[in-house]
Every structure is written in C-alpha cells, then in structure tokens.
Image (cartoon, rainbow, N blue to C red; front, side):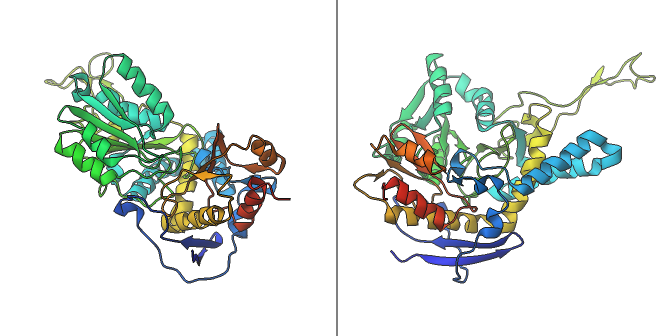
Length: 423
C-alpha cells in the first residue's frame, strides 16, 4: 500500500496527515471524503506539546477520552475567573458569548443549525430524551438497534424490553452490521431506529443514509450516537437523514465529562418529539407578586423555548462548556478532514506492521474510521503495554487503538514493537 503524507499548516503547528482507500466494506458516501494537501515531512511537535500528559506516556486511546490540553485548560481558567470575580469584574458578555458560540461551533461541526442544538450532560441523556418523548414508542411502536451500539445504551434498551417494549437487537456478522438484516427488522410499527454512527467497539461505520431511508419509509424516526464521530469524522446530519443525535464532549471534542450536545432536527421539534421538561422561569402575574395585573392574562406567565433548547434539563456544566468552547475552536482551526487523515495514516501504519498471526483485525473500514481494534490471546500484553507507558483500550481479548492529532509515527512504531513482543 502506498501511503501519501500531507502537511497541515495552522496556528497550532505543522501536522502530518495521510489518506488511503483500503479496506472499505459497504461504507456510505459519508465515509469517502478526502482532502488534498501538499506532501511534506512529518512534524507534529507543536501540537504534541499542548498535551502535557504525553510527556510521561504514549496515549493512544482518544476513543476513551482525550487528555487535558493547554488550550482547554486555559478555557477552564477563563470560566473560573468569571466564577471567582463575578460578571461585573470579568465580563458577563464573555459568559453569554461563550455558550452561544459553543452551540454554533458544534452545529457547524455536524452540519446543523444552532437552533437545533441543546446542551445535555452526556450522550445517553440525549438518547433518553428521544426514548422518553416519542409518543409512538409508548403507543406500542418497536425500537430497532444492533449489537455494535454502545453497551450502556443496549443495557438501557434491554431494560425497556423487560418493561414490555418491543426492542429488536440485530446481531452483527463478523463484527460488521448486516444492513439487510437491519432493514428487515424495521417495519411499519417501528417507532425508532437507534444506532452508533461509529461504533466504540471497533470503529464500524453504520450505513446511516440507507438505514434512515428505510426507517422514514416505514414512519420511524432515527437517532444516532455520534460520540465517536463528532470532531474526528466529517459528517452532516441532514445529508445522512438523522432526526436526532447526541454526544458527550470528553472524547474527540477535547472536553471533560459532564458536558455534551443533543441535536433535534427543527422539523421534529415539538411535534414528533413533544416538549418534556419545559425549561425556563415563570412570572407570577397577580398581587402581591406584581403591582399591576393586566386583565385577560394568565396568573402565571411563561414563554417556552421554541428551539432545541426546549429539551435542555436546566442548568448545565458551564465550566464544561467553557472547556468545550476551546476544544471546538481547535477542531475548527484544524479541519475535521485533516484530523481524520492524521489518525488513519497512523492506524494504517500500525495495521501494516502488526503480526497478523498474533492479532486479528475486527475493524472493517480502517481508511475512514479513527478506531482500529484487534483480537488477541496474548495475556501478557497488558503488562508489557503498562511497562512501556503505552495507553490503549483493552476489553477482554479486544485491543482498541485510537490515535489523535497529538500522536506520531514514533508512538505507533513503539506500540508495534511491544505488541509484536520484539526485543
């Protein structure tokens, strides 16, 4: 395989990226996007220096969460100053602008409008808004998913099954979703199709457009868990036919736990997904609460949000969004295509060098996904990795590697040496 290397120039330094067209299995058009930039040598030291954790270990587990960066730490300190001094001293304009721009930046990232973005504390919170809010589920509609969906979501869905809801979990075939099996599970009683756009298990990429089209033809709505896509895989929720989506911010968005996003397509708000929480504040419109009570008005005046903020739970982690604000600005400065190409150039390098007799790859589309996973029977591997301060995701026999923009070829070469048990 001939790998092309590229140079990305930005205010954050010179970053190497690459692209290839290998190992795509039934990938949608959304996985086929490429960038074209001039070939140049690798130099990612400037970006690497922004992540102090890399001074003491080789961190290759962005799919589990990214280390704290200096630019995100600066955002946290900015909010702490606002919190410590109060709005008069530190500027209330900062707070309002930060929250507004954070929603706008995330909307731009996924091809949505700002009015379609709400703030929620995690991915599952967004999915739960849909599960709780769709009348079609409570009136007997079924839910269709597959076993590559997030295990925490499957746990929740199994609980709904035990409560009497028809939940259909399609089993994957050789670690890949069978599109025809998914489509066969969808019928005219399907209320919701809910999947992970990119699986945290092995980076499998769903055939989202086809699933959405099948769901919509049968009157179903579609939810996508985009936590392993937002910020690293180019995506457009409208082009993919996604009605609802959610993600946490602590993975590819460079933020902390406790702050995430919920997308609700504007045509679905209020009607297909009725209001549930009714956030906001009421005004008492009678004495002694008010001096003059206009006639013909209700005793309690209330203006409900008319956009996706209608689904927000109330106060959120403002500190967390101050951090995400900086993470999203960093992503915008780099470009998602470039971030993905950098990651896939490293996973392709890893895949070429690993001993195929010792490690079986279970990631179908390595060229379009930032995650690569292998099966291994090497019981000593976790100890060797720990001894060499190499951080990857390990779950039983599964070894998941997910390099990000702060990783380089030296990280991969060292990982290969340890995994192959080379002296």
